[in-house]
Length: 185
Image (cartoon, rainbow, N blue to C red; front, side):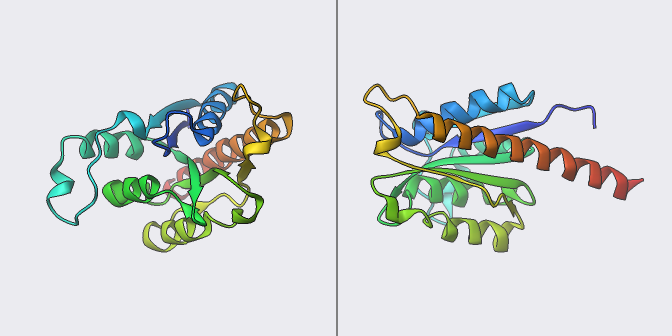
């Protein structure tokens, strides 16, 4: 297990003033501090088509994005919560890249307008578990606008939770790689 752990941090908000993107940036920095290699995937920078179940899979952006996610050891999703669910861009990203998420640890960083949407990632997580056999990290970050100051800085409690989630993702990824190595011996 000499290869460094690579973690894709998927920033799913398309809003230029996104709070969940701030969480993604904090996660990216935290992954680096853990000694792992972060791969920030900012969906605002990808010309990803809406999944139509057919021709959209041939779009020029799908393969490079799929390749990036596939080579990662784990995935951290940073997404806004709209109407008690992760945003449509997060679901579309999963639909367009699906199988490359298989059997990877996945963690969540969510930003919402209020405190009552904290269970919003559950539907997305269930899909990952059942469809792609992902291992959902049972620790996730949930913040509201009160957790981020007017300059966009995350509060200390949220930063601590980002670091805890990142540490868990890196530790779990290394443990799974070790277990796979042992099984193959």
